[in-house]
Length: 148
Image (cartoon, rainbow, N blue to C red; front, side):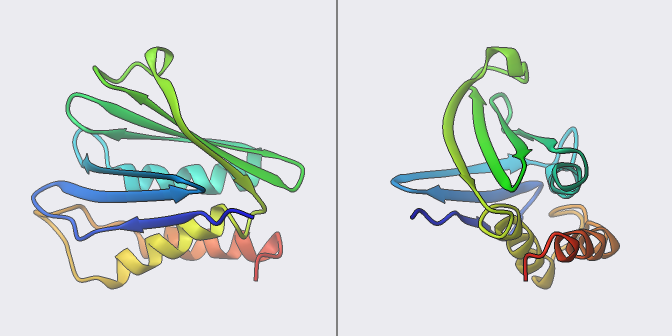
């Protein structure tokens, strides 16, 4: 059984190191906080996949873009990561990684990575702070689906 690993490095000057590992694949990149904060989008996407079965995050790399597409079918959660090396058009992106598993093995891993990042002291101008209330709301949703 494969284990998803998610990590965020310390943000600096509007750039955030991101690492996602699944099976034999490791994806590492530095995302920009311009024009949108992808961490806020990630919290929203995780919440949406729990509520509605799908969520999406756009990670802007200037000029490339990653797209994290979260989906749920019953109790199975999946993540597809797409890359557009030249811009922000998802239709022109290709898949570079996909993972699937239970809510605890997929969604909860991202929540833990966000919580670890939140515990690190950072803030503007390095990266916009995200709302701790949003993470608290997300863990309440995760508790409702029985992750812990």
